[in-house]
Length: 555
Image (cartoon, rainbow, N blue to C red; front, side, top):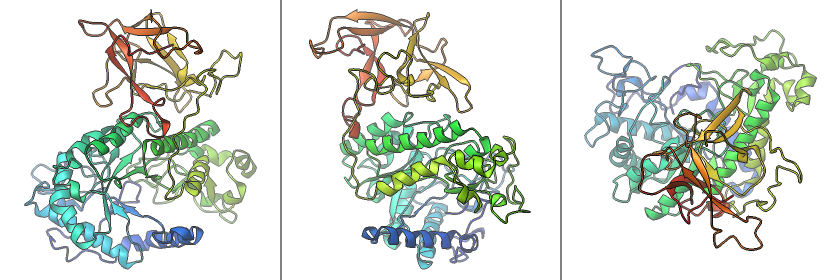
């Protein structure tokens, strides 16, 4: 709704300053018609209904999210001139609320912004697109350098409670409101404010939208960062008496920077695709109802993006490689980013070489590169249809640890560990012999793990010495003073270590360099709040610092 950074330029449908009744609102949403967005959605909806006639009652579910209101509704940003009455552009945002006058009951700007939502929904409906849901704001915690509008949880609560909720309840009661629409690690914090039954916003909220990122981490999350918090969030929904039909939707995901094709490294392209699959499965196991890829189609370098925030997508438009495409420039006039990562390496590969790498030549001939991400997204989208249920299951070879390591093989398997990064959560799983479970107790008593980043550069991280305040569990950190130093102390066998068990001893990992305590502190298993979701109680428990004793991490 309005522009985002993946647009040629910023735009909106109500640019007249002071038009609180939105009499000059573009009811034809002409920009979205002229650029082909409307036509594409209508065609996609028709294809969806034809391909799955049993789902004809809803067809394609379209969710609308704003990146920014029109500038005249926004408070001046730090980049605007001193004394400015309102923001000059849609880019950037004031904090803690981007809207002039905030979102309280008497804010005429919040009231007008809510009316904008209603008129936008009506405009799309008149063009044949019934919106399924909206979110109040994309990434409200981030006053981004591109089109943005920052809110705190309380600010969004008030906007929903006093403006957006009542407006849509009156004009479009069938359109759902999904709160938050930001990184899953902070979902529990926002839920306490917006979904609490004593909150005035709670009656208007139908679901929660989540992004797969977390803080400053890159996009190789692989079902790791934020996953435990998502289980915690699902557990909170039950304890807060939120309706059983509350939707949890993965509303944005992408790999950045640039594209697998542009980078030219086949391993990176396929690793990015695998990360998607792993994270989708992890989200579904936690209780998510769906997943949205941010961009279906971009150009070779991951644009257009008018702020240079280049990212990857399943399909890439390369019209200059199509049969008959001679003379078409490699870089279109609307691409402003240049080539910050160099010219696309993929352009150096022949048609046959691309085909051998998994980019089908028949589509290259049509000017489209089909990337590995497409195959994973297509497979899951085709087979996990609405009404599907996550099956309680966990592959368990903990007695042999040979899922990724053959009998007699000493070296861990499973490929490069892309998650040996500072900031990753530490969770527990049955033994499977992969590089992710290959740890070294170094000379400083630190638990160290090794891997590579997305460019193939070796990485090394260690388990910290205190639980993170946001995740409430242990994270990987640099192997310095912030890392924990542990003693391995054998303890008496626990009751569940039976005579038939391959595990004959139990240990405590005792923290040596933590704050002074009256009793010893150890690494302990912290079960997920929802019992592990579809994984069951043996998968995904957080690692935390706790009292030594019965709560042991066993060898």
